[in-house]
Image (cartoon, rainbow, N blue to C red):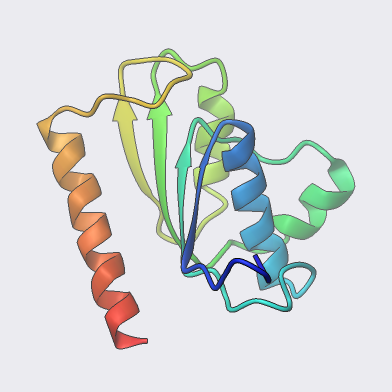
Length: 128
């Protein structure tokens, strides 16, 4: 991120989602990504909290104050963990879909919710 950045946000699926969320939480605590600008948003697909007790205690010590979009599948084996992760963020946007552990094809309602989220992020970034 130092060499290739700066990056405004992180996008992750499965283990990438787990890492993205944990990094944002650790950055908020001053424990990671200290040499790069604050991550302003995350998009999480089929995510969960990091399982290392020591890292989890630090990453999720407080609600993560970062814009977040969470895609949670009704058939996903990590569904409950994804909901727990979403609850770790301040004001998360959760889009549910009927599929499992996959990048979902969104219905019209989910697509509109995602586009509204992206519009808000774009406006917020333009103000910064």
